[in-house]
Length: 455
Image (cartoon, rainbow, N blue to C red; front, top):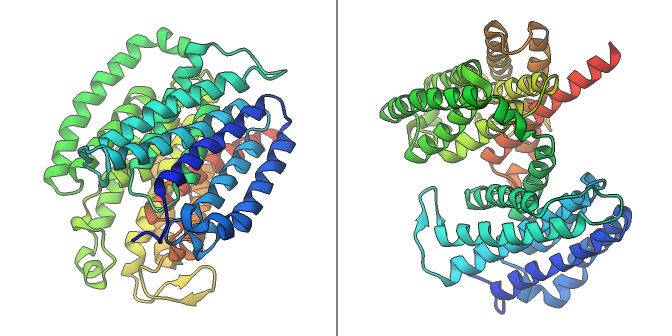
């Protein structure tokens, strides 16, 4: 039940209206915008809860600042401004996608009867369509407006609205998934990162390589459809998992080719096998994967979404960026394998694991718990994925240690987040999986840059 006096309509109207401040990004420097965002955060932590809390804050928002939607909204604006201080038009567009898209999704979803999404009964197609339309429209307008600031490059309107539509689509998908991470953080940060990386895409490369891309696309369809059907028959995926897995598999097959798809298949095989090992024992302990280990669309996106996007980028840029992105692609899958094997094999050990933040024994399955068996299994899985990619010639053999180290860094971050934020209900396990694959990929790119700089 909502608090007495709480108005979701008023909350979302304020949510939308606050993006009006993004108009200032056309004129003010980034540091001033960041300072204003900090002031907003202070007001959202102090005065607004006292003055308007009963009307604007949902139940649970008062449990702490990291539970407060209005505080996280201001925090996300601060992060956007700081991260994209040299491209404030990206910050403005991502902010608009959050404000207009999320606001429209909630208002339309609550006021118009519609069919629920198959992967999230609490969301509707009407709400997601509203998110996409209004997020794209608002994001495109703000992108064009702020891009006209002094010193910024020119931006065609058609291109701007195409970019905003892509960002709004990603935002709508993120908002529709049953994730525990607050939308005020997940939507704008993903949209901003997406827009920033799209700047490096060269569409002319698609024209030059169109025959090969089309061939890979048809091969991807021919391979993914029967494999997805078999996986569903074996009970390793749900119907939503079939859809998510096919989207990821076809993307990887198209842009990373057959070798990239084989690396994805190796990860999926390792993960599925690890889930089945000792399943009865894990089920008795209450820590086995739900639905007999069948994975849905959230699992697919969490473990393969970053890899699929990196595969897309690798097929959309020229060398040497392509080689670096393929290494990051393999590192993302290796990180996912490290996490999956660690969490599935670790609980089978004779001794309880220990909590990484307190170094004390805890029951198997506790978020953030690690064990020697699980860490060894995870490292072995990451090494297998990296070595397999090297054998296929997708990455050079010298990249395998980088991939392994990146995977271990991602696994460490997963344990830290699981031990700190997950017990507080601030982030869910699937969101952590997404974050750790992103961390593994970014770590690989960072190590490549470091070693090349030292060479």
